[in-house]
Image 1: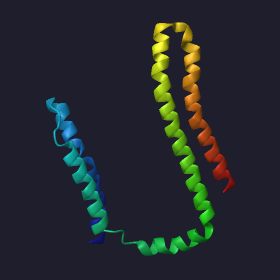
Image 2: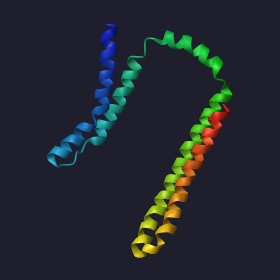
Image 3: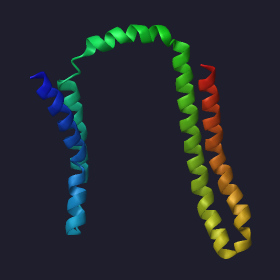
Image 4: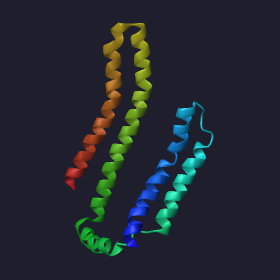
Length: 146
C-alpha cells in the first residue's frame, strides 16, 4: 500500500500541475483561445494543495532525527545571513530589470534615429545590468562570511 502511494501521489501532483496546459494545447490545435484557463489553473493549484494536506510525508521520523543535527550546525545568525543574501540578490535583480526595461527601448529608439548613439545607449543599458551584478557580488560576500 505504501509503495503504491509513493508512486501515485507524485504522479497525481504532476498531472495536476500539467492540467493547465490542456487548454493551451487545444488553443494551438484548434486556433481558438481557451476561455477557461483560469479555472484550470485554480483547479490545479487547489488540487495540489489538497493532496499535500491529505497525504503528508510519512517518513517524518528520519527528518526529525536529522533536524537536531542541522539545528546545532546552523544558528539563527546564519539563517539571517542566508536570508540577507537572498534578498540582496532578488531585489537587485528586480531593480536591474526595471532599469533595463526603461533604458533598452529608449536606446533602441535612439539608435534607430541616429546610429552614432549606439555606444552611449549601450552604456546606459549596461549600467542597469550592473546593479544585478553588484547585488550578486554582495550576496557572495555575505555567504563567504557565514
